[in-house]
Length: 165
Image (cartoon, rainbow, N blue to C red):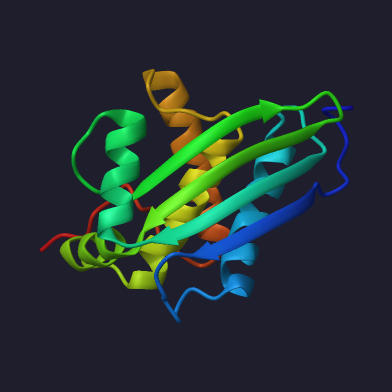
């Protein structure tokens, strides 16, 4: 595996719908994930050649159950990510869970369209699945700048700058 490899990484994406959301079809989610995977690959922080990812859209009850089970927090959160690392063959693996009711509520509260917020959460979760994090300030700045660049390429504004009321 070569960090300098500019060949776009191969993506294997499985999308599951625990809750129906017609505004988030597989092709749209795949497009957003692919953009994040390609940008992360080009960034070179994580060395990988392929990405194998599961993405599941869930309702409030499943989101709450998963957040309680894995994070010991008794509420539904917007996105949960499970990073499994990079296998010896260069395949990065992970799972992302997006809670649609929380996504809808946050989009409304933040004065964003559902799609703009969904893109951000999908990109954010994908980067987490690739090992990016925002616990330390320097890591947070790096991850947020990469997210912002990806969203900019998709025609969306910086998600970390909230509009003035």
